[in-house]
Length: 130
Image 1 (cartoon, helix red, strand yellow):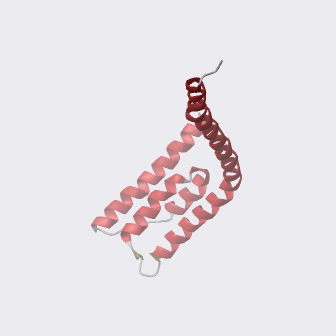
Image 2 (cartoon, helix red, strand yellow):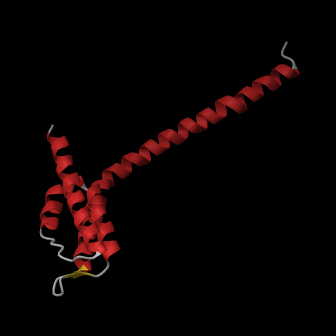
């Protein structure tokens, strides 16, 4: 015969082990389905984010006076271009047209960042080819 203590232990096992594990499994399965939907939308979202970065870079450059409106923002935007290796060719063509001629601190940092972006994208290309 099953005593009250036995029923209590069975209830504790069900509530303490089985129910939480079932909830975790349900959450993982649901998250997996959500990730599939995100992956399907991801390419177009990445394109629009990349296009916005290029637009931002273009807007920051004053071509007539050959200056950048906001040095730190320009440098941060350049750095962000590394996150889009799938657009490597376009990025390299774009940054190849940028010439930094100033002698200020931000000019040095921007030159270094341009070189860093170029190197990172070329390394990504080499790794992809291998």
